[in-house]
Length: 124
Image: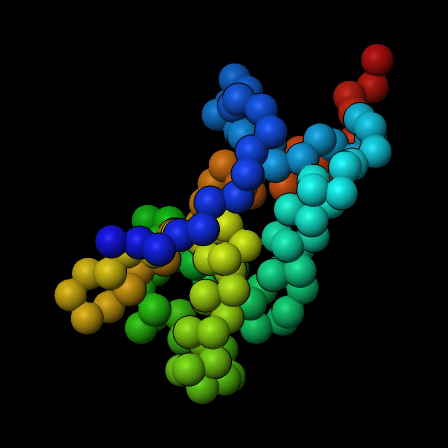
């Protein structure tokens, strides 16, 4: 059972299954709520340890990683747990407990939405 915090969504998924968290920066100015949502995600990735953990999960074979396989990032295990919790709270990771281990997965729709947030509009 997972205690994942779900971020609010603004619109239905597009043809690629991407659910936007916020409009692209070039589309219109963000509302305060949209800016809070986007900032939460980027802030979570703004820490080097979190970015390394996130990268370890994202690049792990099968798209998921056991905490036992990704905890060698130069900090103690409780600190790893803290950072993974922050990534989950930001909606960037999901997790599932299997026996004594927790497995983490990158939330692909959120990553794609973050990419669209920063994308430049197509040339006309």
